[in-house]
Amino acid sequence: MNILILGSGGREHSLAWAIQQNPKCDRLIVAPGNAGIAQMCETADINILDGDAVATFAEENTIDFVIVGPEAPLAAGVADRLRDAGLLVFGPSKAAAALEASKSFTKAICDAANAPTSAYGHFTDADAARAYIRAQGAPIVVKADGLAAGKGVIVAVTEDEALAAVDDMFDGSFGDAGAEVVIEEFMEGEEASFFVLCDGKTVLPIGTAQDHKCVGDGDTGPNTGGMGAYSPAPVMTDAVTQKALTEIVQPCMDEMTKRGTPFEGVLFVGLMIKDGQPRLVEYNVRFGDPECQTLMMRMGGQVLDLLQACAEHRLADCKVHWANDHAITIVMAANGYPGDYIKGSVINNLDALPEDSKNMVFHAGTGTKDGKIFATGGRVLAVTARGDNLSEARDRAYAMTKEIDWPEGFYRSDIGWRAL
Ligand code: GLY
Image (cartoon, rainbow, N blue to C red; front, side, top):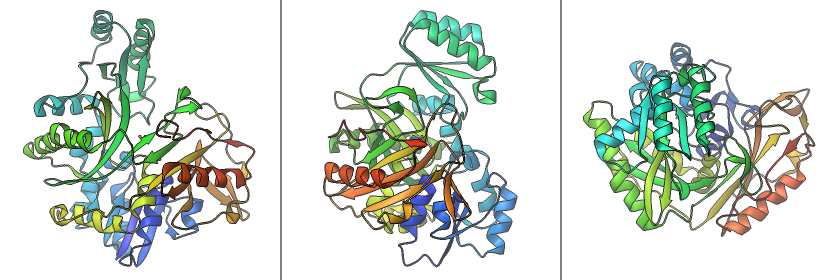
């Protein structure tokens, strides 16, 4: 099978690494990929937001299966364009990707499905949004309705912060994404990420994880895309998982199908759990990054069979084979991230690190020049390890980070603290 993966992050590196272990994988191309991906398979420099360009590339390279990694091409309708071209695709349609691309859409689906989530208001007008904040008080959460590259959520501790966030959004700080805002009740509890495959009918759980969004140790400092993650998430007990499935995920998926826009792909279910009761924080329509790195480390090559079965609407026949193991990933980021950071610093000694079923450095933002690996982004490496328990996995991952010679990078020293 010839497989094309779209994306360039640690998520796509880990997907490629797991998929390449499956004997069904003949040829693997990642577009555009990164330096780490280029060490293990072919990469191709195509614009993944351009459905016509991806379809032409897929036809020219006799691709059998396209896996879409990030949300932007999904929201742009690339999966629809590829399906129209007769390709087998893993990733939801543009209409179903609205579960991530529009916060108010997701709230409306939850309302229709009676799925537990926070109380909210949806506004296209700043004065009405301000009045709602004054009536509700703080803490309160202000969200840009559209895709804002992980930056459109402000957890406001005071009313003034919430009012300022509304002003920012309507003044255009978040571009079109902030033309509408959703203002939500602040939910207390413990957050977890729950991943399910859905083929429009069957929902198949494929794992849980928890990530660390704040940049600093002790969960302090500004929000990031995620500074590390571990799987499984202990808070996702069997009882909580069952409730999340029956009260939230399945009714929402049924509602999508009822509307004629079935969700087909991986659903990243962000949950807040308090007193054993999960409530929906958000949906994303792709694997989380860096959560995916921990899931792929645990699932290995079987993931290709599962993604293919999902795309072929055969999930009802599938089972996930889990080892009783744990995985953790430590993100190494460029100094200054998530603020301004310098690109282009050289990373040394990666070649000396082990690459096997228990140790892997996935690249998130890297390039090569003169035979050297250098940083091209904010989050640059995801140092990932597996073990019989979380502390074994954690020790293994931190041992690898210490071998990496990159003075211009940093990482949190307490990934996994909550579970450990
Ligand atoms: N780690 C959070 C995300 O992928 O959105």
